[in-house]
Every structure is written in C-alpha cells, then in structure tokens.
Image (tube, rainbow, N blue to C red; front, side, top):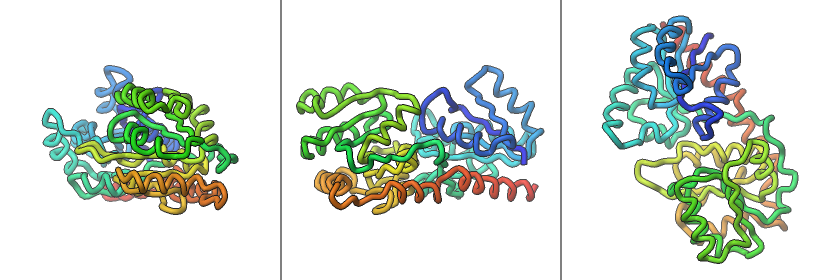
Length: 328
C-alpha cells in the first residue's frame, strides 16, 4: 500500500494538526510519502506529478479538500481526508460553501472525534488521533505534587482565563498552576494573575520543547482543560489529553466537544460541566485527594495505550485505505 500524504501542517511548526501529521507519517513509515505544501512554492505541482504513483492520497485537513477533488479527478485514485474540527466550522470568506462542495466529492472523510463528526456536513468515519505511548515517560510522582497544569494555545475556547478568574482563587492556596503555551489571551491571563494576587501560585512557561513538556506532565498532579463553548470554534479532540494520559497523568476536562472522546470519566480523569465553578472545584479537589489516590498512573497509561496508540490507530486507516483501493 503506497500512500501519498499531503499536509500543510508539519513540524517544526507546533500545534495539534502538526502533531497528527508527524504521528501519521511515522506510524505508516516507509509506505507513506509526505508532501508539505507549505514547505516549498512548487509543492502543489509536485502533488500532481506524484499522484498517479500511489494507491491512496490522504489529506491532512479539510482546507486541502479542494486540492483533493482535483487530484482525484487527475489521478483516478482514492482521495481521503482527516477532519479535525475548525477545518469544517470556519466561517469566513465563503469557506462553508467551499467545504460543503468539496467533501462529498472525496472518497472518504475521517473525523478525529464523534464531536467533529456531528459538525461535518457528510457521512464520515471516526478515527481518533494517535499517540506513540513509548515516547512519553510515566509520572512516578503522581499524587505528590500540589500542581495543576494547563497546556495549549491561550485562546478563549481553551478556558484558561476563565479558570484563573473563577476557579483557582477558590482552591487551596497550596495548589500551584503552571501554564504551558502562548496565544492572544496571554496578556489577559497575566493581568488576571496580577489583579487577583496569584503571582506566587501561577507560572507562565511559554512554548517548551517536547522533553520539557514531558517533564511538566510528570511533575503535575492533574492536567486541566477548562474549555468553554465558543460558536464555530470547537475542540476537535484535544491532543494534550492523550499526551498527559500517556504519562499517566489524570485530566480534568470540560464535558464538551472532542474531549468526551479522549477523557474516560473516572478512569483517565474527570469530565466536568463547562462553566460550572462549583463542579470544577469539587472535581479538582477529588483529583488531588492524596489520601484516597483516586487515579492510577499505570491504569491511565494502559487505557490510553489500548485506545489511542498509533499501532491501533494506524490499522484503522489501513483498513479504510485497503477497502477503497480494492474497490477501484
């Protein structure tokens, strides 16, 4: 099976789609050729030159669907796409007409979560993002550090500013909050820390390397994902929940959108009503109950491995690709 994987999001750029693209290409190994259309100006032409040499063409996100329609016509090969969330909910400049016209013309549409599938305007197959469990160390200090962790882009829907303002001041003052990431709400978060006199409890780390990110997962007692609903701006899956789980770190997440697929309530963490301050305080207190140890790092890690390791996710894609190829 020869797969041409076309993406516009690939390392060294940082983000959820970049992480997916790298993991997908590494999992499929020698069977997969990667073309990053943002890497060089002639890459689009290269797609057409290479397309007929492969059994299946896979697109990294919905923005590339128009290119996929043309490549399917040109190559007469199956063309599939992974949809992440924002690539179907984006609302500007006629994009909704574009995506609704393109997606039905592709051979298959894969969505990273049930939540993404519900907003995708065509029938789809749900295949979650994967993670290479072996790349992440185990949190051997789970339950020992009074530290909460946030990892992600500081935008409104991630809820970091909401958590800083509404939840953290009401928690035990011994609990510290570490924030990894940056974004347009960074200044707002910093101002909240100043105004609420939380400087002794909150630390901003900005963007960190993969090695340092793993250290943060291993030094925390829980990862928080306090997302809030923002129209047309959804959380497709939440890769950081998988990364935390791979380290055996429980996740306290809003019971919202794609996080429902990656946080197994009561096993790998807790799902909490979005925006419910009382419920969030209770959930945080429960997750940090050092006397009763509500979560096991080994159970969390094994659960994530069973459902989301790239060995498993890769097979879902190959089953789809072989099925389409045999129907040609």
